[in-house]
Image 1: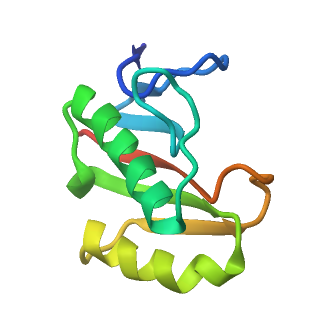
Image 2: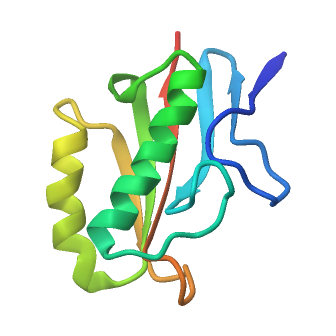
Length: 123
């Protein structure tokens, strides 16, 4: 059995914000979008990253989880020149032991600078 978590930033795209299954919460990619309308909000890198993680936090909250339960992060950084800033901001969100992590460069097109998804262990 699994449970769909349908709280968090709204989207017109065909995906669930998160699914809880087998003690894990799998959160779909979260970007710099308005939580109510789903409209993309263009900003500098830090602003887009903050908004993306705020949207991620809202979904985790709806699943009764928080960042301390995140075990895996997949981040999408559109411009390699933002990697150093990403790593500095990331250390303000997570502490040791850090979640496992994969970061890809590029692939977001011309609108977004950042996107993130995660897996949290609910137990």
